[in-house]
Image 1 (cartoon, rainbow, N blue to C red):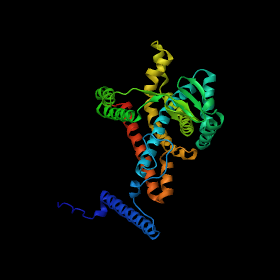
Image 2 (cartoon, rainbow, N blue to C red; image 1 turned 90 degrees about the vertical axis):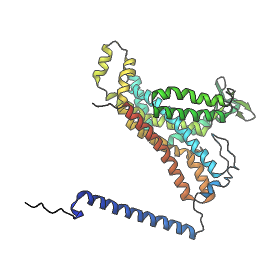
Image 3 (cartoon, rainbow, N blue to C red; image 1 turned 120 degrees about the vertical axis):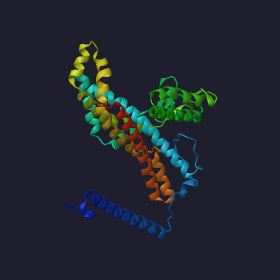
Image 4 (cartoon, one colour; image 1 turned 90 degrees about the horizontal axis):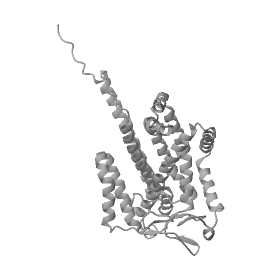
Length: 373
């Protein structure tokens, strides 16, 4: 019996038909993007508006109140952008760390057997989550700038620590560029250690920053804040804008993290707790050694989403005057008129930060996930 002739009609093959439709959609999308970009460039050229990122090499001619690295108005727009990015990263790291610790405590408190502790934690979560974050930032900023005394009457709770309407002043290490290099070395060592494994981490994390510190001559001088004139000099200053932003972001994000933690703990089977108690472990040991390690498998995925939201919420800093990347780029756009490039830079910065958070949380989620046989 003769074999049936092969069907050479590609329309009869579902896979080829799907590839063809996808290719057609991709071509249509590319044509739309080409038309949109071309129209924008043509309109900008008609209005004699410069395009491109060449303006980043020009002098910025504006000052920035808070900087992680040395900066002056004579520096370029590119360096001003770097200062804004570093300010955003500083707020993001501190706020995520503070919100996580506070959220874990509140989440555990919501499950406390003490009625008062559980109800207070519930009131905190429900009240903070239902008030817009921007209003909370305004509230904290008003409380710091209007309720606290001036520098000469500043609160002095601890040696070298001052609290006034100019912010929080604490002792800090002198020679900031050196310690910035040590911090960068520590971050690099942690990243390499996580990538290469625990043994590499145990070697690199202490060795790399220590080597950088020794390479700069092992400086270990402290700078203490001192009242000079109408303000403090020396030490580390958390300005009212930075303090308000950190407090508002941490408290707001912690209310959501607390619910994530509570849900993760409740997802652990009750028999695990009873088994731990039957072995003679205290409730705190059961929570620390049995419940939380298993709850992490439920907590980490939604926690990553909360970190993304917190990172994007740092853009509200512009409302209270903190010079984050959005505030700096807004000033650059006002001076240069290149709004499209400015908005594109803002999106790229937040995309890069969010991608980094996703990579880390996905890696950690794989580490704590159950390995099925």
